[in-house]
Image (tube, rainbow, N blue to C red; front, top):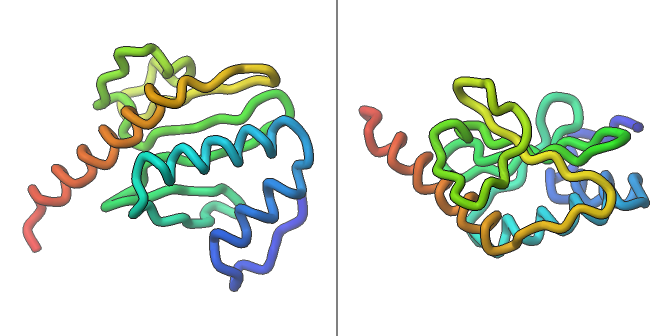
Length: 133
């Protein structure tokens, strides 16, 4: 994938990535992005690590990485989140992060994902409040 001009706003870079993919991965990334914004209208889009879409609110919520066989949604503090619907299916052995790997044809439980995103934001906000200013 080409490396877009990093002076562009992150939202434009993410739009370009979705368009560039042009397949189920782009559609999946676009759907995840929509659900993230629905769950947290105040989310901030960022572009980090040479081309990874990142969504933040008082700290990183998650990333949206795209690979040949999978779209990986990695939650920065996923190990600290309750996951009653069992969405996390990757990175389960880690002490900090957890991920959701989506493959072609996988369906997304929108309600469960939005709840997970809101929980991640709440965790970030609780951590921020605990820090001295």
